[in-house]
Length: 165
Image 1 (cartoon, one colour):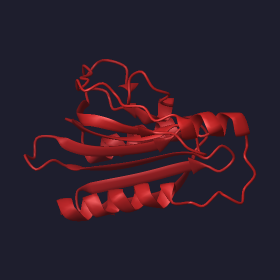
Image 2 (tube, helix red, strand yellow; image 1 turned 60 degrees about the vertical axis):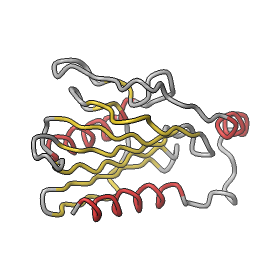
Image 3 (cartoon, rainbow, N blue to C red; image 1 turned 90 degrees about the vertical axis):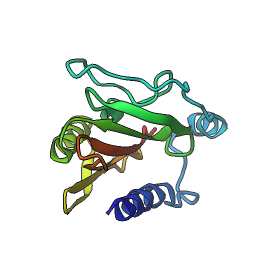
């Protein structure tokens, strides 16, 4: 099951990153050039957010939109992957939380809708949940895959986003 979730997460990430916008006019050429030239690396120390705290940025020290905040109480696993491109700065981060996959997806759905993103995909497979939202006008997007961790005591989450222009 973990392999199928990983495959879904990779497909979502590649699907959103693989869109060809080379024929589309640049929304802000200066911003696009800056975004393409910028590749950041997040700190190597994992961030831990207290369960009662406000959500933390998915990649502290970088441009991370509110809809890509770490679920409250989430513990980042490893180093977030950050990049910039025509769709603005974006990234990929994995973390664990004690919340259920349903609660995690609900959290990101509410944040995406509050930011003006519209749902583009949703999946329920066994205990795993996935959700994706985007805003065509700005190229902002978020994808989240949440599934029970192997130990059964936590939820493993993969979050990817593009801040848009």
